[in-house]
Amino acid sequence: MEDYDVFNEMQNLQTKKTIVVVEDDENFVIQNLLDLPSVEIIPIRFNYDLSGFSKDYVEKTKKLFVYYYNEDNTYQNELLRLKKHFVHYQRRPVFAYIPNEDKYANLIKMLTDIDIKCIFDKKQVIYDINRKLIFIDSDGTLKKSDGTISKRLKKSILENKKIGNRIIICTSRPRYQTIGVMKEVGADSIIVSSNGSEIYDNSNNKIIFNSFVDKDLVIKLVKYAYSKDIRLVLTMEDYDYVIGINASNRKISVYNYSYNMNRVHKPIFFNIEKLTNCNIKQCMFIDGKIDEIYKIKDILSKKDKIYIVDEISADSLSAEKWFSIASLNCSKGNALMIVSKYLNIPIENTIAIGNDKNDISMFEVAGLSVAVANASKDIKSKVDHITLSNDADGVATFLETLVDCTRYDMN
Image (cartoon, rainbow, N blue to C red; front, side, top):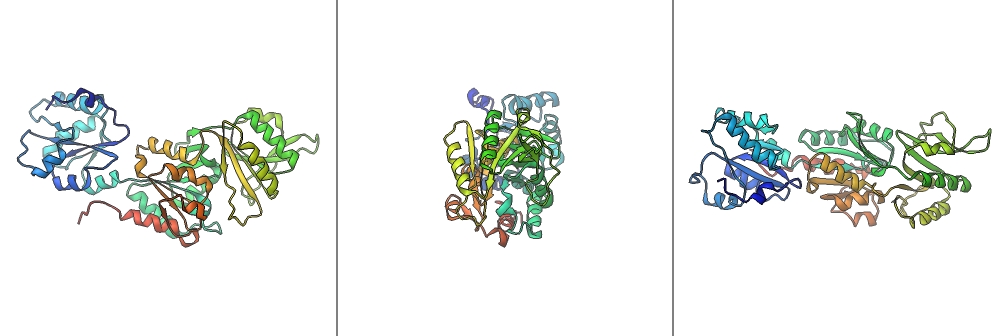
């Protein structure tokens, strides 16, 4: 069975998960692995005689590329064949399902030698195939209106992690606050902060992605905010800064400031000229002077090369209104696509859960979009599913349904 299409041999299957399956259970393959849009199946057979398979199975698998394992070949030569088909031709599987039996010992060792993970349990195969990447907004979604997070929600996140789902906190908050939420709920160490301006792996202290606002624009925004006496929050590295004034020389300055009003830091003043040396991920106008907020937002919306993260909600009862400015390639939706590729989880297996306008970009690209019931009517019209409100544990309710959603009944 070496006479197959060279073009198909060389195809790069990066858009799909490729898995290798020893055909010990054809019902398992038919019911759970065939016809999945995000999975490419490569059966391993040990001879060319198909009389041991049902006609239905042969018909449904004849379109697949099949690897015929040669038990009579030397170990080294068969290893080279495996490497050619699964590495050189860029079909590298994310894992191989093989029963943990003595007759497969050499095959298991060969696959391990070329860094292909072997899974021996069918239930684990299902978990890995159906593994979800779940982006969850924080304020108004994960958190209740009083800012608390329920024990039920923390438990539902833990149960999802046990079956392989990746839970990512994705928020407009800066890195240091997002890390706090991540740790409190027990979510994945990868976090998305500042509306997608940064993707950070906290466990490895690694920045996966970041992008910055043009420095000349930042200085103009600072001067404008100062002239109108409206608050402008600048997110740099792992801190927030807001507009201030240095009383000694009356020059425009900024000072270190926590977005959480209960955690104000000691002011550290420096002149605006020093902003040219700073990388700023996000600029947020936030103030009770609503007319001024809408006015500057309207002006900025006409500019190119910036991304306006619209967080002005007509339903909000807050006395303040706000919106954010980021570079053009920043959004929660863009972050979801980057993390999906980074973790090798197909976009079809992604879920976005949120409640506000800054969540729309991830709703638009996720495989499944979910809004909590406290979201506005406009937001709820843009999603596939609506769960209960944040105060009624809507996120926990939804996550609990995922734990039992397997396509294969092992009982």
